[in-house]
Image (cartoon, rainbow, N blue to C red; front, side, top):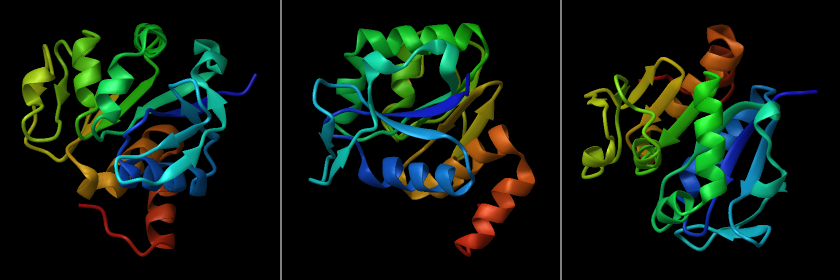
Length: 185
């Protein structure tokens, strides 16, 4: 059974964070799947860009998880947070130490799931209060144990490259960054 990276999209997701991350993870050769959290396979972002998901959240099982990735955006994060199935997947993956990644406002979902206790994390300015139990970082991208968080859409490439580093190694991340002529912050 192959392990997969699942990127969860809910209505109102932040397009840069979702599409940029998915693109770089796929460039790295990681088995990355777009998951619709709602009932429809087509999910529309905060700025009107529609994406067709590969899977429904009901088709994702913890046994298959390599990493779970949550892009930010509003009301996308509110819609992610409303999914009991997503909370269940996050709790199960956390218990097994699987990689959990969130950017912008989405780390607040991890705070609400009570998985940030004793971890360092960052979120979009104003959402830090939702990082329950975490030490709020000054860094724009933070890896603390098996959890990666990032501040905002402006750090999407750094966020994706940190995920690639965690799953495929620093050399693969450097290769992907070089391929798009990008220097990490």
